[in-house]
Length: 126
Image 1 (cartoon, rainbow, N blue to C red):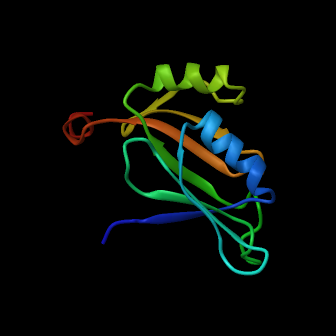
Image 2 (image 1 turned 60 degrees about the vertical axis):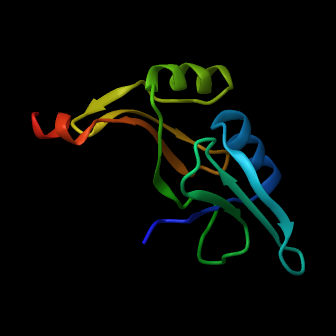
């Protein structure tokens, strides 16, 4: 069973949309009304895979309460430079046995990780 959608709690969908498209480079997959006063805003990385829904209707999911959502990239140095140029406050690139990564927060304080993951055979030899 594959992960299809990850709900990211935000206070302002428009502000979050600008960050997730302009800084992270995700693309709008669906932007449609979803009942009275609600909007389904679903984004996807250019290469496909699991999607992100920017949600503001779950009472139990307060904006900024999500941490550890990881986005995989092929070149962490290039992504770090691109996101920093786009205005993101990224941590320095760090390394762990599972890959090289940077951390940042979206406008609501949700904690995100952008990582260049190691191949399984690289992890086994460390």
